Image 1 (cartoon, rainbow, N blue to C red):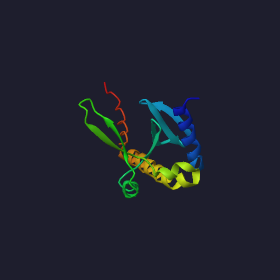
Image 2: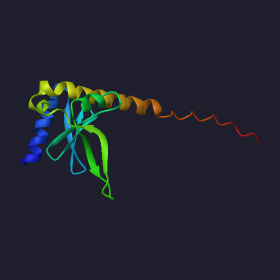
Image 3: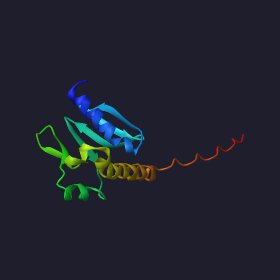
Length: 131
């Protein structure tokens, strides 16, 4: 197993306290899911956890940095995924509060998607042709 896959396995183990964890290769890195909710990105040897308007300030207050990627023009785009504090990667117990924030953000995002999805109107009954 190479170093990158070892780090993904380490992150997966750290998140086990929250539920069933799986990883999926994407964009040259990995996405991490807890109970089918996308909560983290592993890029290089860095873990980035999902944030939203309710949780981002907690990460920023700890000096955590966001995941950024370059656009075609070279400008960096900042995402809503932030590194947890470095010491949080030492054990599942230390990562759990940060991972819980990420899972909560993912749950809110899923809930918002569900409530925004318009329901299809029922088709009007077809009238019998008179003839």
